[in-house]
Image 1 (cartoon, rainbow, N blue to C red):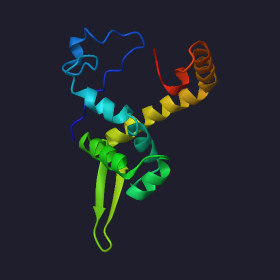
Image 2 (cartoon, rainbow, N blue to C red):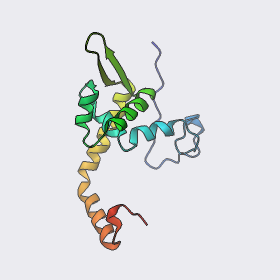
Image 3 (tube, rainbow, N blue to C red):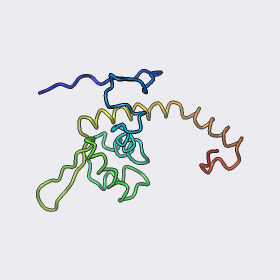
Length: 149
C-alpha cells in the first residue's frame, strides 16, 4: 500500500498565485484541473448531496428525500459528477429487484467532514449573515430578489 504525502493546507492569508510547490494544482489558475471538482462540490446541489451521505450509503430516492427541493435530473447529474470525481461510489446490488446505493469514498468522506465544518461555521454566524443581508437590502431596494449591483 502506497501512502500519499500529506496534502498542503492553505493558510488563511496565503497567496495561491505563486506556489510552485503546489504543482499543477493552483485553484486560482484558470486551467487548474481542481476547479471543475470544486464547482461540482460547491455548486447548487453538490454540497447537499455530499452531506446527505454522511450517515452511510443511500439509495437515489433516499438522497432525493433528504435534499429538499432537488429534482431527479439535478440529483442524477450531481451524482454522476461526484462519482466521476471520485467522491461518491455507485454500488449496484445483485438480485431482483435491482438496487443501487451511493456512498462516499475515502476522499469523499474527507470532503464531507470539511463541508460539515463549513456548515457549522455558517450556522454559528447566521445572526451576522442575516443582519448583513437586512442592512444590504435596506440600503438597496430590490436587492432582496438577488440582484447584486
